[in-house]
Amino acid sequence: MPKVIIAGAGLVGALNACFFAKRGWDVEVYEFRKDIRQMEHVQGRSINLALSHRGKSALEAVGLKEYIVTQGVEMHARLIHDIDGKTIHRQPYGQPGEHIVSINRRHLNEVMITEAEKFPNVRFFFEYKVVKADPKAGCVTFNHVGNIIESKGDLILACDGAHSAIRRSLMAYPLFQYSQEYIEHGYVELNILPLNNDYALEPNVFHIWPRGNFTLIALANRDKTFTVTIFAPFELFEKEMYDDSSVLGFFQKYFPDAFNLLGNEHLTETFRRVKPLPLISIKSEPHSFERKILLMGDAAHSMVPFYGQGMNAGFEDCLVLSEILDEFDGNIGATLDAYSKRRCLDAHSINDLAMYNYNE
Image 1 (cartoon, rainbow, N blue to C red):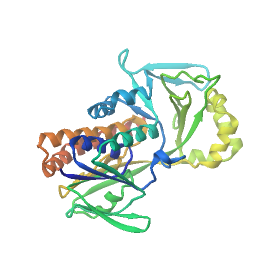
Image 2: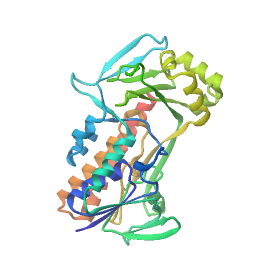
Image 3: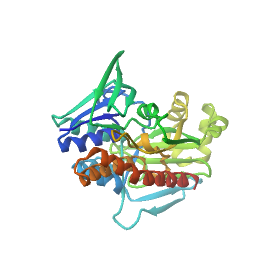
Image 4: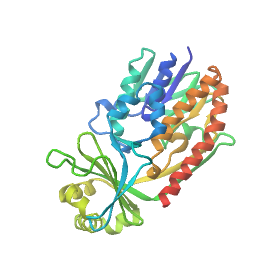
């Protein structure tokens, strides 16, 4: 059977491993981090994910939809919180019964890695850092605790994130178009703990505190906590949230109801420990190189999170690749050519929609 090398054991890499495991391919997944299932804290973004139809369809194709959906919290509407801390406005998602699902990024990732490992043809290699990729030779070079290791495959999938090492090694490739844009906003993540052993806020909605050019959001978790994220211009963080007193004053003024639930100690401790993290939008074209390497997920089209489709679009990448591979009877070269032509337009479009939603 053909061999696929997957760089990155994040959401898109792990789901791709499930897809190709079911095909019977030999699958090798290389990840520069340690196994997240054995880590107390995981570096990188942990903004809760909103699983929509696009993502559910991909999970359904590998038999994970029903389990994953039950691990999340249904969200049937947006709930807008006014600045008075009392008035709210409900905006339903679509028709009655339609909803998206709030789900924890880490748990979702762990489930998919564990699912892929059930197949004897799948192997994961942790703490392997990509050094470079050679699309003509179908080879990827890794550094593992100081040792240089090469692996060759019939197909190489770059699922190694917005700062993809494989994409970086291809930057000088003729006619490769690439653009990146950091927006003026950053984010800090917080948590609301359970109140009297129950949710402190209504759980089955997407909570939003819109305040002009900054906003706070909250999504429920199964353990009755809420993942809370503030998005604001870096300049605003510097001028109005620079020490304990200013942070508490800012939240009390603009988010009075959330402030009471977050608490003084949690706010000040978090802002002492954490600096606002950046958000990037990336476009690339083509996504395929020498009919051997394919950029997928954030490595191909990282987007700002305000449209809620980053993970969903990455999952859809996996499904589209699988469908095109069927269409061309397993011909890898023809599949990658067709995938890149079709997917670039879609990826650029959804990136633009995410940016438009950010501006709105």
